[in-house]
Image 1 (cartoon, helix red, strand yellow):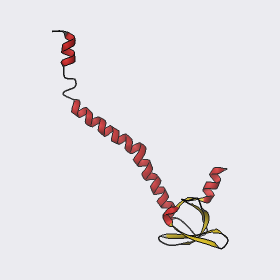
Image 2 (cartoon, rainbow, N blue to C red):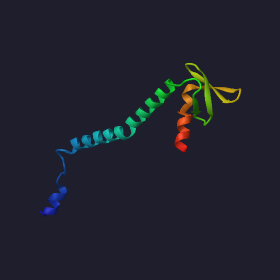
Image 3 (cartoon, helix red, strand yellow):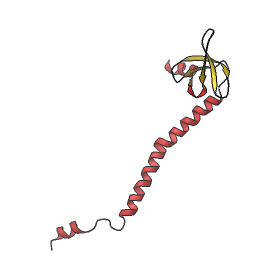
Amino acid sequence: MNVLTLLLDAPVGAAGGGSMMWIMLIAMFVIMYFFMIRPQNKKQKEIANFRKSLQVNQSVITAGGIHGTIKEINDDYVVLEIASNVKIKIDKNSIFADASAANNQSK
């Protein structure tokens, strides 16, 4: 028989093929965890801690881009003053950033 025929017909990696697939699958999950899942969880914890530390008279920015000053804080909502004597009630989860920190970054 031809040597080339024997090499092409031989089962390649028959003994370790299944274990190599599992190692690659696990490696892919680990890479996804460290590059996608872990940073997202860290960011969510930072946002949750920021929302817990909200104080009256603090300048904030909402998810819709409204800049305002906190006048009242309740469990589920916050009352923002967006202009003199103009107050709106918004959900606490829609507050994203501290306005003074956002202004400092843009300069």
